[in-house]
Length: 276
Image (cartoon, rainbow, N blue to C red; front, top):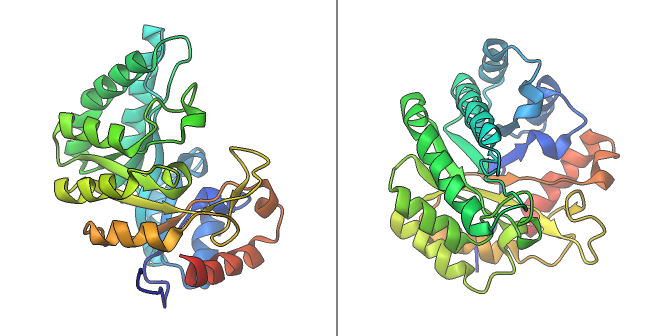
């Protein structure tokens, strides 16, 4: 059994979890709720002065766990692959500017070519941006996505595939992100999480729940305890692998985005203590 969670010292909330709020609102409201760790999605940085963002984060004592997201490397068009590299270099700059040690990669896929070809382009893309990531001190976390996204969002669909790619690249600046929503179904998950630990590759841990039934595969994620994922068990595997970082709440939910977000944040805190 995983040790019960008794406080919010390792609770991190993604800005997209509370999508109606801008970055300033997230920082202020997270802090007021006793949450002092944040993962910043790039949409809230689009019109944001990065120096001002860093100052706000520092003023509120907010730990930036990561920036999401980079990736989307594959394409049958060479020009699109070049544009993806440019966007990832910008993402690295943004992560560095706000003090994020990790950039999460949603690696991408192109349904017009084989998964193998997309994976090849993903690895090539990571290797191409790696020197800039090293220079900026930003690690790159390969996040495997559920197989339902293999056609367009990610050709990396199991933790084994992510581990294999990180091991082949063989850099302390490349690792993996474990998201329970995408990986809970995998019978090899415990083994692959342990493999992360042996290689020192585990950079991030994301939590939410899988609703039964699920009415939208993108924007119907559940609050912890809403669905069928045994989050405490997976957290134990992650901790047994040596991971001591934050538990990042990443929920895409049209249902919860329509709620009063202050009330929703309290629901997140209660669910975190009871079901994580």
